[in-house]
Length: 186
Image (cartoon, rainbow, N blue to C red; front, side, top):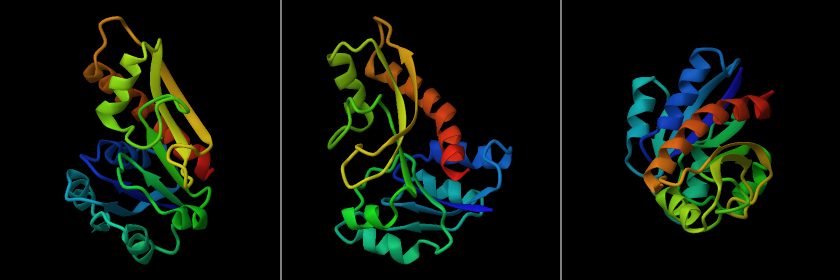
């Protein structure tokens, strides 16, 4: 049985998708052994509802150290699912190839500092891109610079807005995130 720790900052819809995929066998031989949030958010409620251990660790310069203190020793994979804090370089090095993230764009474009949520979708539209999507990648000390594991994409329509892109990207995330987790775990 592989153990997954999930880090979240928001509603936890990707967390829920991962839990559902473990329950229905899409992600076999795995369980979520911890959910960590860096702010009070609905992801913690989802963890509680599924009887998954959870921790709230406030954002700040000690976040990575505090995370390491609560991370179960038998954790096989750390999944950033809508997680907005930046992990320290030392933490990323220690857990090299054991941390993955989902990003709401086709990396290497539209990644890096400040590129999250609506900021990404606005930048994609402003750049008059023909397609967008989501990327699952390994986490390194460089923001959104790790090796790409899996991408999913769609064509951008003339009438797309940051809101419609967000919706389409979310559907892609739901599709590729479980596949990427499987790929890394197995």
